[in-house]
Image (cartoon, rainbow, N blue to C red; front, side, top):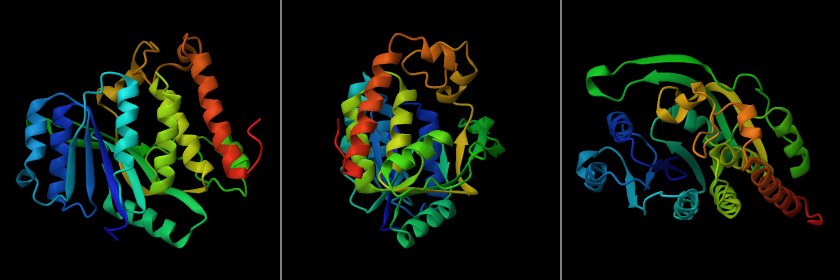
Length: 281
């Protein structure tokens, strides 16, 4: 089924994590093609990735994008790379997480057999590790998404939106039909939130508006808990644009919250109106 799914790897520096992940892909002969969307500026990793002889067991395409200097540049990159995917299914990944091929296999098989579903995933299991060679070790933790195990299903986008709100898990890591991912990322680019928590929530909602979403508790992805992307969850709670794990209250009282929440609801409302064939007003 390797011709049905493409893994889209989103990069912005963090070179040690990228080296470690590519070594993981290479060591296990990762079975699915990978498109790498590099928005960083580190020349070492660019040189390493351009030479495919460094990772002979990985079927990948490397794209060197302009530096992700702003969120709008980042969202433009996301939309562009999504529209380069030619397989019917896609999945997004950051360079500090690890998909298990068996988990991708199960989700892909489920979607092929269930056309009313738009996306699927298993558990997001915690992992703590160091990408540095002399410190390499790994510790596994719990399933981050064990609280709401039921599928999000409904006959309308409005009903699926309600159920997703009542049992929210992000759908960023879901295997999804490529046309639906393309639509979600194009709408994200239009909304262009400055805070990445809104980006995650917009995609989380949109990726279940297009159709039902499947959830199971079988191991699917190992989700890093000790890179700088996640450690912000433990910080003083400053609601900076790139800290999407800040404390909730700090997020709510930040000056960007009201206009970006309004933009998010406009995007979601428009998608619901389209799917349910009702008036946008």
